[in-house]
Image (cartoon, rainbow, N blue to C red):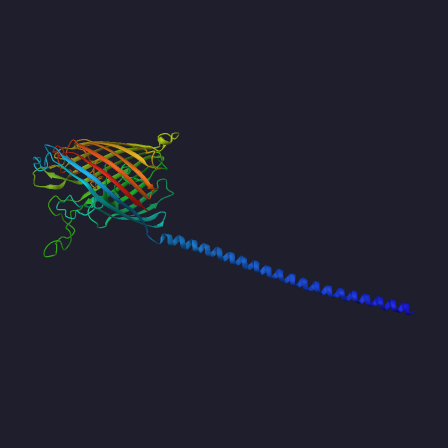
Length: 487
C-alpha cells in the first residue's frame, strides 16, 4: 500500500511539473507572438512612412523640375564671339583714274597705297530669351574697331550709316547689331507661319559664311544682300505643301530716313517740324522689299532664290542740282545652290562642298533723274562659284577657293561690305580668293588665313550715284589672318 501511495505521489509531482513547464512555454509563445505582431505593425507603419517619403520626394522632384524649367526661361542667355585679325592691304590706282564727276584724278592716278600691319578687334555679345518654343527674342551688340585708331569723324552722307554700323571697323563703342522677336504660329496648319520685327544683321548670308569661317549662314542670299536692316518679316513654311525645307519670307524695312534730327536740332533749340521733314529737297525715305526663298533643302542639296527692291534709291537729277536724291527704283535677283557631300563612299569627297550662284541688278530711274550715270534702265550681272575640301592636315579644317565676276552695271546692296578693302561681291571685274579654315579647340577656338585679289574692269563703287565708266582703282588685295573665340 505504501508503495502504491509513493508511486502516485511521484506521478503527481511529475505531471505537475510537466503542466507547469507547458504553461510557461505557452506563456513564452504568447509573448513571442505578441512581439511578432508588434513587429509586423511597426513594419507596416515603416513601409507607410517610406511610401510617404517617396511620394514627397517625387512631388519635390516634380516641383524642382518645374522650377528649373521656369528659371531656365526666366533669364537672358549670353554668348560671345570675339575675333582678333591681322590685315595686309594694298590698292593700285589706274593710270587714268577718274573722279566721280569724270575728271582726271590727278592726286591718286597711277599710285599705290598699302598698309602691311593693320589690326582689328571684333566683339559680338549675343543675348536671347525664350518664353516657349514659339516665342523668343534674340539680340546682339557689337564693337568693331582698329588697334590704335578709330573713324569717328564722317563728314559725308554715305558714311557711318545704320546699314554698316557694326560691320565695318569704327571705334570701341558698342553698337546694336541685332534685336528682334520671333513668334511662330499655326504649327498644325498646312502652311505654318513665323512673324518677326526688329533689327537684323542680314550679313554673312548664304554662301558668304564659308569665307568668314562660320558654319551657319545668315538669312539672306549674300550674292545681293549684305546689310544691317531694320524691318518686319513674315515667313511661310512650305515644306508640307511644296518641297522639303522650302519656305518664303516677306521682309519690308527701311534703310534710310531723311527726318530732322530732333526738336533740339536747330537754333534756338526748337525745330518747327521735328522727325518729319527732309534735310533738303529730294532727300526721301529709302524703303526695301526682300523676298528670300528656300526652294529645296534636304540637308545636302540646298537651292535658294531671292528677289529684292529698293524704293527711292539714291541718284542724281540730270540738271546737276541734286546729288544723292531719290532717283528711282532698283531691283535685284539671285539664284544660289550648294551641295554638301560629293560622294558618300569617299571620305574626302563626302566632306567637300561646292556652290554656285547667279545674280542680276537693275536700275529704273525716274523721269528727270539718273542712276549709274544714265537716265536709262541698266542691268548688271554676276557669277559666283566656290569649293571647300578637307585640308587633310587638321581635324575638321578645310581649304576654300572662290571666284566672283561682275559686269559693268552690277550694283548689289552689299553696303555693309564683306572685306576691309570693300565689297568683293560688288566687284565689277574679277575676284580670286583662297582661304584656310582651321579648328584649334573644336568650334570654340578657330583660325583662318585668307587672301583676296580684286581686278577691277570698272569703277569700284556700291553707289547708284557713281558712273561705272569712271574707273578709279585698277586692283586691290588683302591678306587676312584671324583667331576667333566663340562660346
